[in-house]
Each structure stands twice: as C-alpha cells, then as structure tokens.
View 1 (cartoon, rainbow, N blue to C red):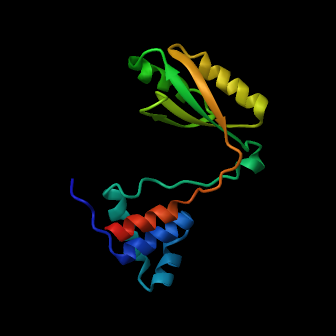
View 2 (view 1 turned 90 degrees about the horizontal axis):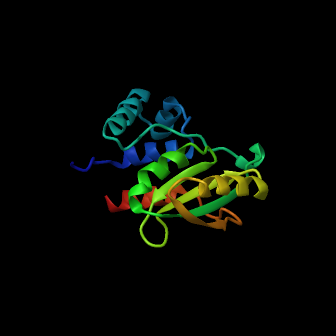
Amino acid sequence: MAKFKLDEVDHQILDMLIENTRTPFTDIAKKLLISAGTVHVRVKKMEDAGIIRGSSLTLDYEKLGYSFIAYVGVFLEKTHQTKFVLERLHEIPYITVAHITTGKFNIFCKIRARDTKHAKEVIFAVDDIEGVYRTETMISMEESINDKKRLMHRIFNEL
C-alpha cells in the first residue's frame, strides 16, 4: 500500500484536531485561511486513507475516581492460549490496554482502578483466567509523559 502524501495544510489540520478533536472545521478554516469545505474534504481523504480513525475523548480519570494505574505482565502456560486469554481480558472493563509482547511477558496490560484494593481485585481476576500461569504487576506512580503531538511532528518531519 502506497504512503498517503500529507502536505503542510494536512499537518496543520491534524495538529489542531489532535489538540481538540471537537474543533469545528470552520474554526480550523479561519485559522488556516482556507474554506471549511477544504478542511472537510481533506479530513475525509485522511479518513478514507485510514490516517484518521475516529476521534476520542480525553477523560480526567482522577475526577472520575479512577486515578490508580497499574501495568500487569501476564505469563501464559502455553502461547496457543493467547487468543483465549485476550478474549477473557477484554471482558474486564478496567483493563484499558493489552499488548501481545515478546520478551518477559506474553501479554502486557494497563489497568485503571479506584484504589489498591480495587486493583487487587482486577489483578486477581486476571490471575483466575484459565491459561494464565502468573502475573507481575507494576504500579504507576505518575503519568509523566502522554503526548501524541511530539510523535506526530516527528512523523511529519520524516515524510
């Protein structure tokens, strides 16, 4: 599949949308001195090319009572159980991310919980999944970097 070519206007549109996905196309158009129709067409092309896939909200989990973050490395009894275990992990709503990995763990997960007691319940639920040999947990003390824009700008510079 050929790489989709982005120009400077596309970069600026993406930059504004990454900052706030709810920015109206008319506001983007005014800032870039182009028409709202042009913004709409360019966003649609990027969606059709698969560069933009939906949009997302950024939640303040602390205000919602879910500020506890832990990372759980999952060791499987046998690697052929990966799909089954991932399906069971998907049933636990407090697991927000799961990766199949190489190295020490078979699967690596991020969980959000209310507190340590709640995290323990989630981790025990993971341990109880058939095929899970054991888990290893790391507690996040603070999320220090969560910045999509730096990577986006690096990618733009490399294009």
